[in-house]
Length: 445
Image 1 (spheres, helix red, strand yellow):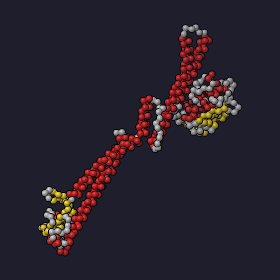
Image 2: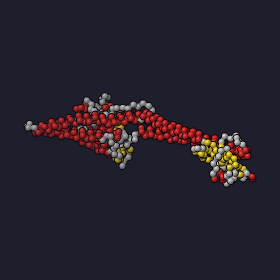
Image 3: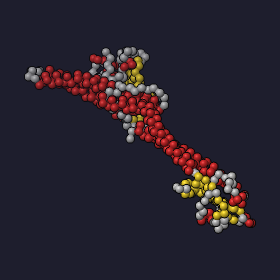
């Protein structure tokens, strides 16, 4: 059953229970009141006869409106205004073996007629029972009134339940309208694969917040898909260049063109360089693909990692002077392989921009890695964009690379709860500061 149907059923059920309880209460209260009036009338007339039984026996019109009969202790009739039936229970009251009582019974007046009866003892010598008085009252009208009341209450109850079901359906339709819009939007997005649609966010309460949260989710999904599309497009573009060069060189080597030793060596060197570039680019793409994943949390010595990476940079850039100004013992809880990639990217970037005879200064203090080169520095228009994927400044386009190194640094820093900042250093050059205060602590394992 749908949620709307369940809400309608619940509303109708609650109203049905309330109406049925109210109907039963009304019926029994009315029945009690009517019976109480009849019993009061019967008791009054029985008391009148009890106080003057001889007068009742001597007079045809004793001033009572109901039918009565007096019997002696043996059950014999003493006087009557109507032949009220006498049974064993009435004789027991007359001889004192039973107390007086009220009851519903019938008399035969050509047809069975419902009556209400009181059987009360007559006081004899020393307070003993010496007969009984029986008074009856026709309650056919009362029973008919109660039957009409039952019918009215039944019709009212059914009408109230039907009305409650209708109102419940209207209320559920209005209440669940935002949910239906969310469902329709989700179904359309599932069909089209485009999360650009939004649902109205009007109103207040939980459903309004649900709509706002749904739109926020759609916005994040749309942004994620757009980032994915852009990443695929940029990656395809970047991969096309080295692939084209590799294909061209391979075609030349496979052709029938006569190549000298020097030309062949140059082609092979170019193939090697392009394959290395391709390998580096694929590695960067794989690293970016892992950027959304939670890094492994294992403690390692960041200072040892930095020192090893600096040694690697000395081999990669032998013409650059690498100075380790201060490297404090630092423990990091995170992914050592990804952090090593980030540190290498910073050092490689500094080495490329330092040039022949340049100097790069590296320090690790207070959980912050600082890499400063003495190159041309950062242009103001480039500085906010250097960590964007595939971004390459005009000056960097003549150098090898795909513009992914610094974006990987930012991804790794943020995955470890840190930040990375690019700025121009005093006296020239660029300085990059990778802070890991959230994951780094001083000490040694």
